Image (cartoon, rainbow, N blue to C red; front, side, top):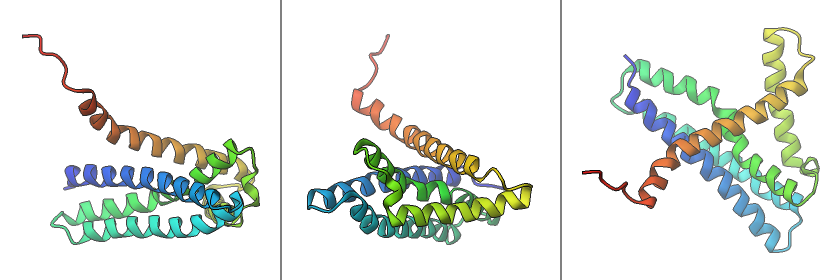
Amino acid sequence: MVGIGHLKRRFGHYAGLWVGAFLLSGAAILGLMAMGADLMDAADMALPVLLALTGLVLGAGVVMSFFSGETPMTKIVVLILALLLLLPLLWAPVAAAVAIAFFADRPIEYSQTYVAFRLGVSDVLWAASQAVGYGGFLDALWSAFQWAASIVGFISAWVNAWPVIKRMLGQEPSTA
């Protein structure tokens, strides 16, 4: 039996981590830029730390699930979902750097960390595409990965932010 409540909590934590990694990365890069660093240098300083921290926090959540009182099947599902959602989660801090570069009208491809991340993801996608079939559509897979990771992050953030927004707006008037 799978503990749906535990999975929902973990998805909530995942959403919070995605948004937190995105915002913290953006704040770190903008802060470094405010101190005089070039955008690419700021991205190269901030992204490795934030990628490692994001992965570490995800791993800590999986370990916490393993030490919980949940069923073994729930723990296995948590592990499988963490592995499946790892790349979209790691995209969050990189997406902040990409967004800043977009608004600054600068090519992010000059960031060594971005290039290393893209090459790492491309290696994973290449291996996956070779396992499934012909790997000639790697650019399409990269584009699909970027869109899917951004959509997963946005949806998970919205689902968790909406109750907070509703509470901030106040209670609905009663009809009685």
